[in-house]
Image (cartoon, rainbow, N blue to C red; front, side, top):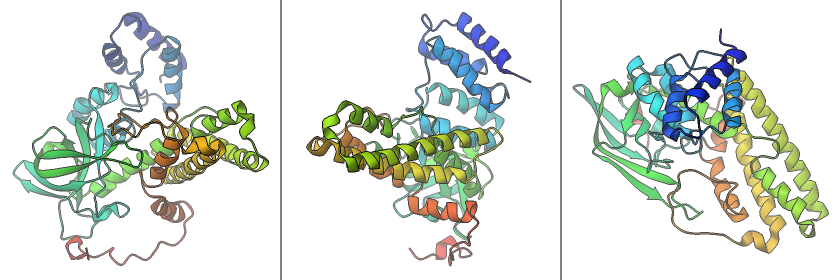
Length: 393
């Protein structure tokens, strides 16, 4: 079994053969993947060594100390956090070998074609149709709030393949090539001024059956793997103490004593403690991941992440008084990732409003926590056994 000493040895061999100072960034990342040091808990040949997940920190520490480049995880977060674990669990061997390496190196960006104008919180009500024609599926529909669609080569897509069964049972999961004919990406300008999100129109897009993940009609179960990992990726990110938004307001508090009041001090102390509890809970959640797939606990983490971000950013604007009302740049841009800490307080305040929507609305996540974590009775669902085509819309 691969241990920490063996991983250090392999990492040193990688650095000796591909010195970061003289090796092109992409060449180094490809070599790291091929050496099994990309995500060590993945199987051999797929960027890993079938080692314990907890040992990834050993590799990362050695590479960071040597000044090795990373794969810009913020830019490719959807691929890393959502597409990759789903492909690993449900993909064919051919799909895994074709898709995982360029996903991890960042050569191919991924997006997520799940939400629709009429199917956001109730995702299983989606209406995008996929109809089988020979060896292809012909897809028509509209997706919305799609992060990184303007950058993406690939998308994870769920579509309705059988309208004659209840909504959760007639869905199939696909990998969609965003460069195919019929895929149109339009920007959605947000309250921040940016168009970080997009809407995507699918018009007679042909997807080979070889790019289906899981069985036909079993897409909802496959999608749960994606959604559980998405919530962990959003709410359980590893950060240092005073990382993220709480670090920005804490720094302002220390540097600007003239802004302090007793009331603001008490509120800041409370939020600092909550942020630290959330950080430590995230550490525990990531330790649980070592033993298996994420469960509904990720919903609780993501729920808390959204609430804390909104309360901290609101307090920061209040602390800064008139300065907090300023906004640095309303330019219409299509950014590659969200930069919460690199912008001003006004941006953080506005952008955090989306935290309670993206990755599952807070209202839906409260239901998940209630039913799947606390074991409370489920809400009555009158549409559970009704064919999708017969649902009121």
